[in-house]
Length: 245
Image: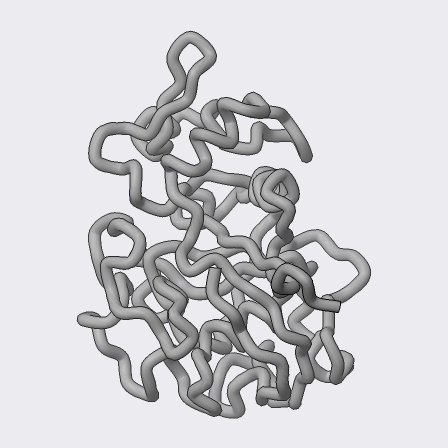
C-alpha cells in the first residue's frame, strides 16, 4: 500500500461534467491505498477462502451470465478458483460492489470513499485533469486499448499509485448522487446516506474519454452495466509503528 498524506484538496473540475461541480475543498485524514487494483490471482485466492457467495441478487464474481465464459478471467474447477492463463496479474473484473467490499473487509481494509479516491488519483498535482497533468497521453495509461493490461504496466503517479486512470473502473464506497457536491461536507465526506447506484471512478480501457481524476460514473451494486470493465482497490488507516503511543 502507499500512503496518501493528510490535507486539503480541491475536489471536482470546473470545466468538467455537471456532476463534478462545484469544485469544493475537502479535508481528509491520511490513509493508505493499494498501489494497484486487485488482480485475478488475488481475488481467486479470496474466493478459495470464502466461496463465491451470492449477495444483492448476484454472486460476488458474476459467473452466471451468458457471456461470462468469455468475460470472466477466473475459472472454477471442482470448487477451486484460479486465474485463466495469462490473466493472473490483470485487474479482476465482473465483481459486484458487494464482492469488492467483502474482499476489502476480509483483508482488514475498506473500499475508498469517493473523496479518498480522487485525492489519491491526483497524486499531489493540484488542479490537474489527469494523474500526470492536463493532457491525454495514451503512453501513460490503458485508456484506449483492446483489453485490460497487467497492473503496473504504466508509470505510477506522485503517490506511487498505478492505474488511477484507465484499465478498469473502480468501485468506491459511496452512493452516487449527481447533485451531491453542492452539499458535500468539508471534512472526510462519505457520500449520501443511501441511493440506488454506487460510484465508479477512473475510467477504463473501453472508455477512452473517461479517465480524468474528477470524472464520475455509477452502476448498480450488482454491477449490471459496467461489469466487464469494473474492478477495485482497498484503503486502510495508516498503521502505527511498533512501540508508538
